[in-house]
Image (tube, rainbow over all chains, first blue to last red; front, side, top):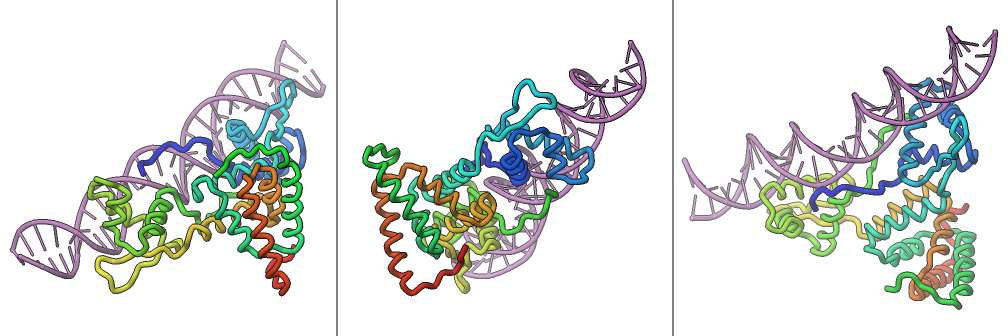
Length: 139
Length: 139
DNA sequence: AGAGGCTAAGACAGCTTGTCTCGAATGTCC
DNA sequence: GGACATTCGAGACAAGCTGTCTTAGCCTCT
């Protein structure tokens, strides 16, 4: 219960906004991002976006494209990867690694018909590829 | 992108530890919680647990049992509810309300056979009760 | 009255997070 | 080349969060 250093922090709100712009725009520059995220913004916002990109870089979510001027930036993770990260965090912190409570919640939530079908389709696809069973964690 | 006040914050690490102790012990007192969470702890830890309980109360996760001395505390949310909260947050923030990316991740992750069966069973149960269709959210 | 446990209120330091300042490096145009 | 603008990196900063701790007022029991 002692306060311990918290590594690999999650992507932050403002950082996520930058990431989403990157997902939409593909490779782009600080200037373009700043203009989009802070329309009519002051000069300072340029630096803000820059700092956010730096922190995203430290978190392994963004890459700078070498030999471009102005420097180009590119997302290294997609939305699914971010979702995966957060789900893993929820599972680790709240469920001690077992995803059963998570599934239980998914079931308790009233899924729409299409969502249900989607999930079932995923499951079927999974079952097929499970002919060659390589399970990562057995509990 | 301006910094906006962040209401209804999530349950914190130390707060979660208190909650888990409450889940395990049922209704109990600050003293018992402090002794369990900070074994051999100093007097100050009593106040720490107290503060955590207060903040948990403000978040609607804990209830004080009236007319008990010392005051009894009781959890108001269970693990599933917390998981639900976090999942909803992930879906809202990252998926703009659609759980498709979440399902996609679930499928991409290599579920164990038992987990897969579990999920399928949930789905089947869901399908049955869907004969009387009362879907809450359609997308 | 004194001791000891309970309770409320709040102070505090360290960290995170979004923002901003500054100066240096780099480019562009006449 | 020289003036000017843009880009870039490093860091400062305030507000808020989080876990911890102090203080002081209660109560109860002896």
